[in-house]
Length: 452
Image 1 (cartoon, rainbow, N blue to C red):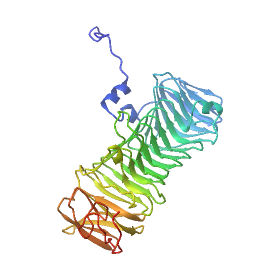
Image 2: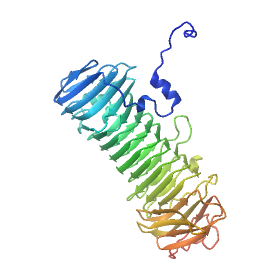
Image 3: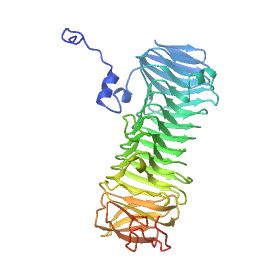
Image 4: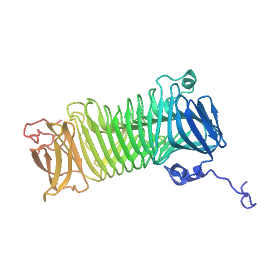
C-alpha cells in the first residue's frame, strides 16, 4: 500500500537486498560470522545425524530444506551436503571441521535458495572433494563444480577450506559469488573459481591451481582486498570488467595474467581493467603469445604497485589494450614496471596523468634488476624481473616531464629526459638515443637493436 505505513502497516524489507543498495560489493550478511546455530548436523562416514529443524538425512547425503542457521561437522565419505529450500530462503551454514567427498556430484550443492552463506569456523580445517565423473542427473543439471550453486553464494569466516575437483571447476556459481574471508585453497582441471554473475573478493587468502582460468566471471570481478596466489593457470583473472582496489595478488600463468574479455560489459561499455591500489604481480615464464594485462577495451592504472614479467623472446606484450576498438591505456598513478617482448609494443595513452617510459632494446637475462633513479641519485623504483625481457615500461608518481632520469638494467645504465607523457626509447615513433624519432637504439648494453 502506498499509504500503508501511515495506516500502521510495517513494511517488510529484505535485509540483504536493502544492504546491497547501500554497498555495491558486500552486504552486512556477507561479512556476518557471529551467529548462533538453530540446528546441528554431524556427518559420520556414510550417514549423518541432525539435531534441530530444517534438515534431514537421505541415505549418505544431507539436505537443508529451510532457511536457518546450521552448524556442520564431521566426515562424509561419499555423499553431499545439499541446500534445497524456499526461493526466498537465506541459509547460513557453518563448516566446523568438515570433510565431504562425493564421487559423482558436487560435494556441496545449492539447488535453490535466495542466498547461502558458508562460514568457515575459526581454527578449523574443512575439505571438499569431487570425483572425475558426474552422474547423469548432475550433468543434466549442468553441475560443474565441487562446490556448485544455482543461486547467490557467499563464503566468509576465518577458517580454512581446501577444494579439490577432479571434474571441471572447483567453486562454481550460476549467480553471484562473494568471498569475504577464509584461507581457501582450490585445485581444479578447468577453472578454480567460475561464476556466471559477479565475483567479489575481500579479506580472504586464496591459493589457486587451475587447468584453465583461476578466477573467471562472465560479468565482472572486483577484488577489494586480501591475498590471491595463483600457482598455475592458463589465464589468471578473466572477465569483461575487472576492478582491483586493494590486495596482494600474484599470478603465474601460461597465457594472459589478467584478461578483460568480450566486446562489452553489462552496461554496454568497453571491457576494461582498473587498478586503484594493492600489489599486482603477473608472471609468465613460458608463454610465447601472451600478455600481462590484456584488455579488449581500456586499461586504467590509478594507484598501487604493478609488476609484470613475461619472457622477452615471444610475441608477449606486458600491457595490451584495445586501441583498435577505441580503447585507451592510462597510467594515472601508482608504480608500474612491465617487462615483456618488444615485437607487439603499445605505448601508453597521451591522456595519462602520470608520465611513463617505454624502452626496447637487446634481450636482458632473467633476474636482471631494473632501477630508475632521479637526477639527484634517489632511487624511485626497483624490480628484479624473474624472466628475460626485451622491453620494459616504467612509471611512478615522482616522474615529471622535462626531468632527467637514469634507467639501469643490471650492470648497465642509460640517462634520458622525459619529453612527453608517454615517452619511448628504441621504439618506432619514439626517441632513439641519437635523438632522432624512431631511430636506431644503441641499446642499454651497447649491443645495438633497431627501433621496433
